[in-house]
Image (cartoon, rainbow, N blue to C red; front, side):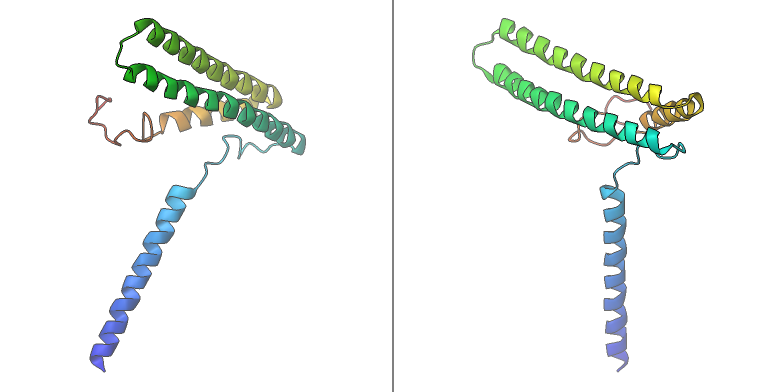
Length: 155
């Protein structure tokens, strides 16, 4: 009888630990960040305008992003060629730089649109929140880069 109680207690403990770890991992890795304007006490009209601007941004970024993925794929093809063609490489890099410029301009124009919608006090809080999010990032580089400070980053 004592052995059965011990076995049940161990099984119960393992199940609770698995549930805890699963719940933690789900919350940690599946949470989408709150928009930076999430706590700005927006009016209904501001929220509608911001959501519409955000939707436009997502559509533009999707288009540019798909184009950038294709350009990066083409860059790999150019680099992988047996014959080294520096003109083709430079041309592909120029296309990628133009795509990056387009993406940056899209983001800056979006921020300017949001700035127009917000009050001065909301703007100050919004941009402070954006700066905090940027400075608080734990990982620099592509998702496949190792997550470590030992790769040339600041110590």
